[in-house]
Length: 352
Image 1 (cartoon, helix red, strand yellow):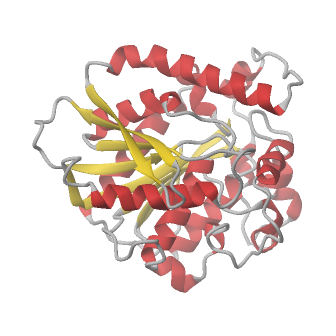
Image 2: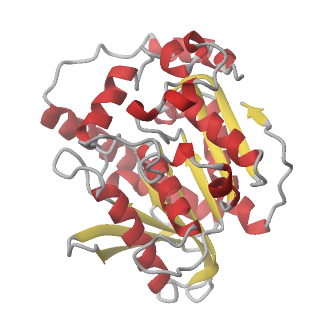
């Protein structure tokens, strides 16, 4: 039985930051979405002052299976020659399937392109409440098929594709990787996915969580309980995000909806996986249990826990020392699977 509760004790550094945060405002859903997206884009624009001359950015259009035109953007480091074949990293943003725009990810994607020396593809999948499950999942799959079909035009290496994301985006990445491993995509076979990078991942639909809870030593020690009222993401907001997906009769055996509930046989087919998990986060346990499942079934895993900080802590930048370790974890997570690492068979947690 598992007990990860030691990671959920707020750090002194976080408590100093939390004391400066403004009180939450009551907002309508549309107002919440608008202000969150505007805030993200402002932060991204400021950060792009560092990267604007270091990347070549190009907007792309991806036709989804229903004819919808998805926005996408590629980022290529200017340090690479125009003809150099680079690894490709597909990025799916976080935001509970409600928040996020193409431009809100410019700084994150530019940083990864420059520091990991890869082509980054940023996909602006569709959001709730206008689009419900499985629209975003379909978009992620269709975007991956597009990358496979356009790898030469992107000057990408067809044997070096890694997918990943943050929070809800990590959920999409994990579902996509599982589908690709079982040739369940609209166009099969596709190019292989060599690795996945899942940061503060949501991996289990809330109403399908019972089997996860049974793996925890005591329900009171679970991250759902311990971090029920955590800042940034609490259980109320998690349930709001899940509810907006409007999943009818959620089924724990639906592995597309619940990539964290894979069987041992399914897990064995997955590529090298890096996980970045916040200790003071309701999502903590599903990320750690997923890492445990993969490690014990022969998948090379790199499991990282950022102790005592909440979901989405990276937004606080230099105010939290672990933010540098977050960036390093993502960059290493992209490069590491391309070295064809071997599995240890052990579930090892690296603490930050």
